[in-house]
Image (cartoon, rainbow, N blue to C red; front, top):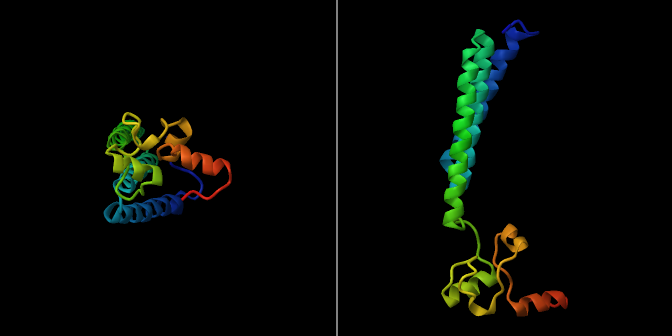
Length: 153
């Protein structure tokens, strides 16, 4: 590796300083939250900054072996983020998410929001669109009111 790039005398220190500034801002997000998914994204962003810092250090010191450490860190970061996604998927909604009207009817009937096993309160099974939107399927009366252009009450 050759660290004799154009402007290396000021580019590399500036890049390290900007990475430190970014890491500081991300640490503030990690501490303040407010929700767990925000903290997971902050941890993932910090790992990306660490990977970039290791790659810059490899460039500055002409040590190509450091790039192996950056690759390993990126793989571990990917696995960690995937594990958190699975954890949140199993838990369901986050604390800051609001239940929809259909979810409120399901809760009143004793079913979990987004569940299709109870089929309580005359709701339909979830479709791909409602799962993507993060809510349960609307009740038939609500669906008919939407189709007729009426306001759902």
